[in-house]
Length: 333
Image 1 (cartoon, rainbow, N blue to C red):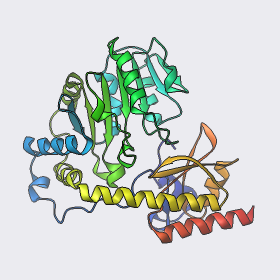
Image 2 (cartoon, rainbow, N blue to C red; image 1 turned 60 degrees about the horizontal axis):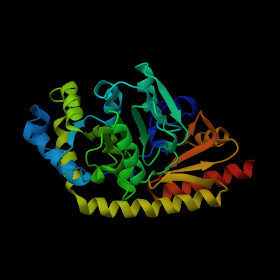
Image 3 (spheres, helix red, strand yellow; image 1 turned 180 degrees about the horizontal axis):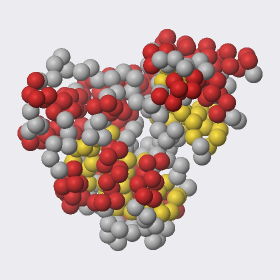
Image 4 (cartoon, helix red, strand yellow; image 1 turned 90 degrees about the horizontal axis):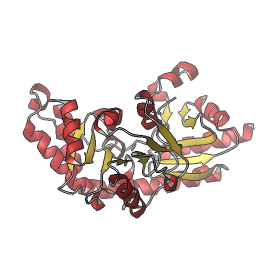
């Protein structure tokens, strides 16, 4: 699977219905932001007004500490923004960190760009004009410090290039975002809404960067790319700092419980964020299949046969279900 989260394949192969499955294949918060008591009727019936979109952008600026000199554009998910990056950035050789979120590589390959995969961000070739990385990285959670990112960005800016930073999981790693530190560097930052707020189906994401880039992206997206409900709910959630602080603490606690559960079942956790844990074992596919037979869906990776990723179970009962399944599988083997 290219991405987690779609149980269709799991049900086709292992049976059951959606309610039978414990889906741990994504890095999406299992505790979604509480939807407002009612989305206004006009959000459903009227075309989205500019004023509402401006309120959403203002809320995003404050939530993500985006400097005033940068532009911001909202879109129906960062996946769409990723696919459009080649259309708004300069031509030139592209360097991507690997392994990472596979969609980044896919869009540049599709455009037939000169592409270099980097095992280390500290080994960017001199020829690269665009560098793309996920920070914290998906799936291993590796974090590059802001100072190093800015140094890379400045070297790219000097030759008319860009640093692209996908901060899909930065909400749960305080201090990881480069956004508050950007001055005149050519940095483009992607922020996902759905992962931390647990509302992936809302389809909302943001791109911040030089205004020439965001203006070009806006012209491609054209009018009414966001739904009225997405604008209203997104604005409400981004302004709700009390919920965000409380949720960050809860996710950290639940990840500690998940890590302990995996460790007690002889799984070595070597990476992740408060939204997912990456563990290693000799044959990840075998464990993935054994859990799937018990209707527990995890995430494995073609390029790393010893890796298996677990999202948060979301409740004590679900964590116990996972623990019991792992104990049973160990007993069988």
